[in-house]
Image (cartoon, rainbow, N blue to C red; front, side, top):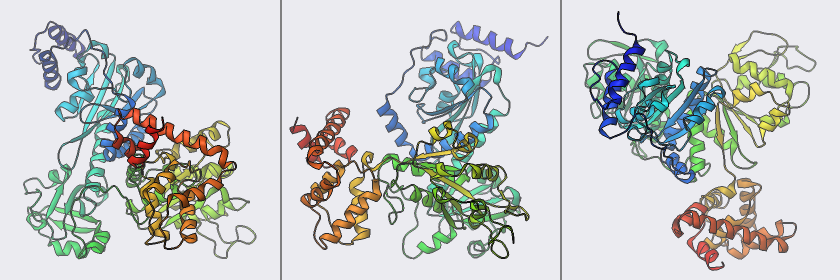
Length: 619
């Protein structure tokens, strides 16, 4: 009688635990190879070493190091979580060296995660934690499921873990996506879901890396053109291939689909015809062996604007994003933008949090731009939606639906945003009655006009923003919990200005906008950095605008800034000392955190080295 898989695994473990390297064909070759590596390192399967972890500061640095792929991964983790929620699962993302960066746990799995110490900051490299899906995939670069006792250390025998690599455009490992569960919750489709999510991240990285190039999506069937099955080719304006995703290599088997080859080495269709037809939408292609595809060219419009004035290259990611609109030199802001970009590319609802004046609408507009959507950006202030006709204002109305209705009806703001982006500002102030209607929109993306009429399907990127603690509003029953969870699919948080490290860059950017040619002294910038800025960037803009009006053409100096800020507090003379003490305390704390590194302290706080020197000398 043939032994069961469980019996074979138990026999394999008995052999392995006796320090025998050869377990034959009792387990898969991938598990056998991993066990062998662990034994060669001298690991004891019955005695797992203490779990190693990095501290919060190191975790922050590790996250910043992979901020783009992490932002894309966070969006996919949310989608994956909703696909398998309620199944005793935990979703995790790790750096290429096996550092766990982020987790999302189903409530039913949190105790198991705590027992196994599965938390951000822990190290899961195979050489430390033995055979485990996350660490072994980081080691091999191949997708893997490790079930129960297939884990090298018996301590993890109650878990099933499935992981997939995320490969960057340069072919190197960019991260690892993992789904872990109790053994009893094993689901056959989990590996497929994790693999699809990893591919989605890879495609997002490909598009970001080649955002300055032409990108051609193609497939043999038009209905698959904008799915994970489509091939992606990156091309320069002359038709030279710059990048190829794995699916494109699969679709072009037998052809030289390699960087530095030309488009016409792969296709019988002339490259000039592709460029000319790209303006009209989908077009037919035939490759060199006779296969027929449907193709869509992305980035064509934005690239045509740059041709002749700038050279199109796959350059390094600039720190300043949309420099004509806002500055994003602070790591937390860059992460927020990456998360917004990832959500926009997937058309997932985005919730932007931040105090008043931190730039939430600017982030929404940025998401709209990078989404490549051709429709309008339609902003709506939910706090201003009052009266009995707010539903008609948002969702439109039929002819004669109510007294004063527009003849012929009106489409409503949601329909105005069809093909574009709807930005709902101050979402926490949306009237309760309208929340149910918005939830219905999120369910089927169809708009039903007030007073009748046929429902209309819309294609809308929804971005909401709040400056309040919306969780408290949910707990108080003033905001629907189900709507909150739908809107919070991609969560983006903007730090207040007082916590940003790029205040100097922001101030100079504002000056260039409100008074071109105006300058500001370094000491004046240092003093601006000590102010708490309750009104954030909006308040800073008002102060700088007023200063340039009062002293046109003159540099902004320390005395001018001090005079402008001090009267703005109710008891300036009494509070100035405490403010200085507070600022000095922040500088000294940062100086300790950086191990006494003056330059790093100044960089973190966005002040000059002289300011740090003065704070230390005043101790």
